[in-house]
Length: 140
Image (cartoon, rainbow, N blue to C red; front, side):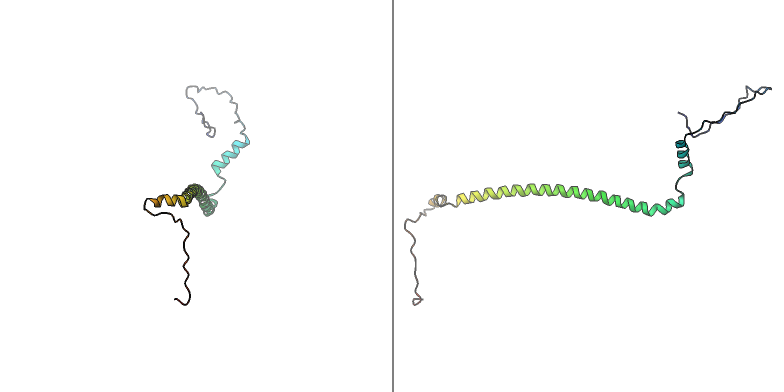
């Protein structure tokens, strides 16, 4: 593959030197397309001078810092969303556990269930209604 930007250097060959010189036709270099001319000027002469590049350096550093902050912000947002999803699943599980424990407690606190548990201790359910104790103000 030949480099298009290098000019070919023609060296005269010593073997073909003759006393008679033939008239040589000058070959004009092929006309280059405008895009090649543009890119040649861009890369050889440069669009931005060194002074302009050093003047733009603080702005480029500022843009780089903004891009890094943007990337860090997106990473933190994704991390927070994952954390929120994890916590919402945990809240659902704890809610289900609370409801099941509450239902179990309601079942165990029924009068018949309490009577069954206390029957082993020898305590029995009252058959008579409780008596009301009345205290007069004079007796106190």
